[in-house]
Structures are given as C-alpha cells and as structure tokens.
Image 1: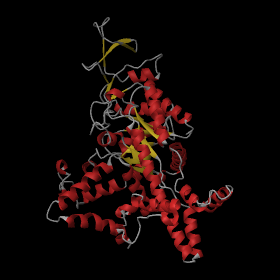
Image 2: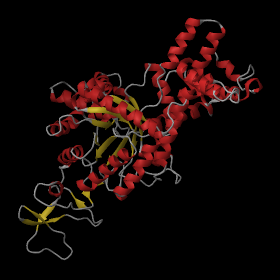
Image 3: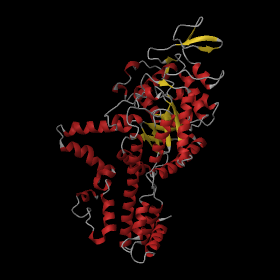
Image 4: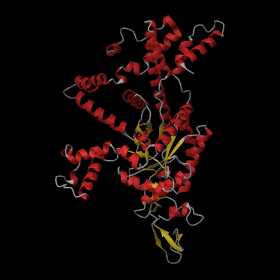
Amino acid sequence: MGYQEDMAQAGRLIRDYDGTWDGISGESIARMRAQNKFRTGLDIARYTARIMRADMAAYDADPANYTQSLGCWHGFIAQQKIISVKKHFGTTKGRYIYLSGWMIAALRSDFGPLPDQSMHEKTSVPALIEEIYTFLRQADARELGMLFRDLDAARAEGDELKAKQVQAAIDGHETHVVPIIADIDAGFGNAEATYLLAKKMIEAGACALQIENQVSDEKQCGHQDGKVTVPHEDFIAKIRACRYAFMELGVEDGVIVTRTDSLGAGLTKQIAFSKEPGDLGDQYNSYLDCEEVDGAGNPGDVLINRDGKLMRPKRLPSNLYQFRAGTGEDRCVMDSIASLQNGADLLWIETEKPHIEQIASMVDRIREVVPNAKLAYNNSPSFNWTLNFRQQVFDAWQAEGQDVGAYDRAKLMSADYDATPLGEEADNRIRTFQRDAAKRAGIFHHLITLPTYHTAALSTDNLAKEYFGDEAMLGYVKGVQRAEIRQGIACVKHQNMSGSDIGDDHKEYFAGEAALKAAGKDNTMNQFAA
C-alpha cells in the first residue's frame, strides 16, 4: 500500500469512530507506518532471504554479480555503514552485513574480552542481530522523516511539482534493512542446542546462518592452531537443525552457509561411524594417520579395519586423533560436497592466505559433483594482505624469469617498496581480488569479518594522539568534525541521528500545538544546516 492509500485508509477508520478519534491524523498514521515497515524480526528474515536468493541466482547467471559485506559489532556501526552505502552508491543492492562471532566474543560478552572459542553467551548473538536491525529501521525512520519535512515544505510553498517528486521518493524509498549473514559458530552444543539458538537468531531477523564443522567444546578461531573437526554425520545433523528452524518459523528460503576448517584442522575428537566401505564415515576415517598393528594391539588401543588390515589411529595425550599431513584440501572438498548434498546453500572454506588459485583448485573439484557450488569467503584481517600479495607477485615474476634482484623477499612489507612496480602490482591484485575470485573461484559473497574492530582502534588512536598532544581541540576539529562536515557524514548532526527529530514529530502528533519540540531556533544543530 502506497503512502496516499495508507493515509486514506487510516482516515476512513478514524471517521468510523464518530469523532472520538478526531484528535489523530490519518497522514500521521501513514507516516508512522511507513517508518516502521517491518513489524517483527521474522518479517525481516523473510524479506532479506528473498533478496539473498535473488542475488544468488543473479550470480549463477553472471559471476560479476558477487556480493559483499563488512562485519559489524554494534547496531550504530551497521547503521552508519548502510547509510554510507546508500549515500555513495544510491542503493544497498549486493551489500550485506556480516555478524562475526569473533567480534561478539571480543567486544560484546559480559565476561569481558574473550578469544573466539564460543565462550561468550549464546544470547548475545541474537541480541546483536536484533540491535542491528533496530538501528537500520531507525535509519529508515530518520530518512523518511526528512522526506516528510520536504513534503510539508513543498505544500507550504504551493509547489505541486516538488510535492509530487517528494511523494514519489516516499513511495519508492529503499530500506536500510539488508541481509545479515550471522555466525552461529559450531552451534554452541549439540544439534538440539544448535536448533534452539538458530530459532532465536532467525526470530531476531537473520536470514542466513553460518555454521562450522569444528567440535563445539574445542572450537577455535579459524585462523588459529588447534582446530578439531567432527565427522560428517554430526555436522549434517546441525545443518538439518538449522533448516528445521527456518522451516518451523516460515522462512522457507533461509540460507545456510557451511564452513569447513579442515584445511587448517589436523585433529578430530571422534572416529566416524561407518556402515560400509566408501560411506561418509569410511571416507572421513580414511584420512586418519594410522599405523598397522600386529595381532590384537595393546590394551586401550582403538583399532580400525582398513583394507582388511587392523590399523591403530594415532591418538594424542589429549585423546584427540590425528589426520595425515597434507590431506587438508582433500578433506575440504569432501566436507563441501557432503554439506551441499545435505542441505547447505553456500560454502565457506577457511584458508590460511588469500590465494585465488588455492581456492579455485578446491572449487573446481567440488563443482565436478555440484556444478553450481559457490562460496562465501572471509577476506580476513588475519591475513597480512600486503605481504601475501607482494610475495605472490615476487614468486610469479621470478617463475617467469623476470629480474627481481631489486627486492628482498624477506622484507617485502617495507614501506620502501610501496611505490615500486612490485608494490603497485601487488596493490592492483588486492584491488581486483574480489572480482577475480568471484569469476575464477566461485566466490558469491566476499566479507571482511573484523573491519570495524580495526577501524575503531585506528581512528581512536589517531584522535588520542592529536587531542592529548599539541593539537588539542584542533585535533578533534580537523580530524573529525571538519572532515564529517565536508564528507557529508550523517551523524555530524548527532541529535538528528539519535532520533531527536523523530521524537519532535511524535510530540506534534500527540500534543499538537502544545508540543514542546527540541528543534527550535536555539538548537545548536542549526549550525550544521549548511
């Protein structure tokens, strides 16, 4: 229903109450409804799931249609990101939000900063999803509120053309609500625990859940050592739990992203159950590092039958079993195929470096079995992007017979190389990495897990250095406020950003001429009108 239709419908309803509702305005009701398009988190999950599905289909048709997101640890950060996207690009199309378990652990736990080991409260995950969407919905309300002011001004001036243009902008308003890909870690427990948490996350608005194949109680950050994977049947049960949660709540096109950490995980806590040779359990066990046993072995040995021989899997003092070295890529391929054949929509292969051909070599093998396989990929701040790409260029040039004598491979991070041909070529490859990987390596969605963690630290360091140093107040004015004004940053009018003008509108709706509004001539925010 458009703005005018909504206003007319509300007006008819008011008139039905024989004057007792005449103190409220049909137009004000239409405005409040427009500013609150999404009533529940499930409304958001259904809406954003449709967006993701359409984007996935567009990518399948043309890999130039890849999507992107930045990780956000607070609703305000997410809000400012999407406001910025709309300001610079005119649309949110193809831009999502990533909700990182790492940042929740490090920044949002009541226990204080924690490592990424699923020690933070489960409830903090759906709570952050809800918080992010509260801020995005407020961004809608703020932007529409400014359009309503423009409409009132055009009417007051008798400018019918301008009023029609503003009316069209209201009816065609694009929401700030975008898909969230939300990190459910390893499910925070068994499949039932995964199901219960998944429901909470979906009810808060998540249309996409990302789950990894690590052991819940041994979970590690994907870029740290000591990762332990689970047999496929255990992981598939959690995939099904997530799908049941989506289906129960009526989000039938919800998206499940399955992450394999097998490339860097050399351990397993369990030997997989196997019914017959070649099944998933047997394939999982085939990668165990074993030694042949004569006779019945020693007391306490766990033995498996491999090709008619009794084998003893290597077991560590931690009671974990070890995989053979060099099997990580093969296990990633097996994990990915098993996930896609059992309900996953997107893959996530956690790697130790951003290398297109490494990723593509696995995706090529996966696509031999599942032709439309596609990935969400972590463009991680855990990678030293500058060093990695300079090394890649150095090695490629050396292999091609180019002279690299001017460069010391061990010192390629040096600023001395910034303006060199090698440094510039590496930067160009970083610039085109997402586009190139989308085309070559099947990456549908590129995300940075922790960017706003780092930007907050960097900007705070710069401000502290200037403000507490010789620049004092000028450090804030030059480095922050003047830059905000000149770049058109929305929150330079921080009272407006926090909802003061929306509150004034409501005061007028509720109290009419008696409303005591904040946006009068003495409000210092008027200094930023220009």
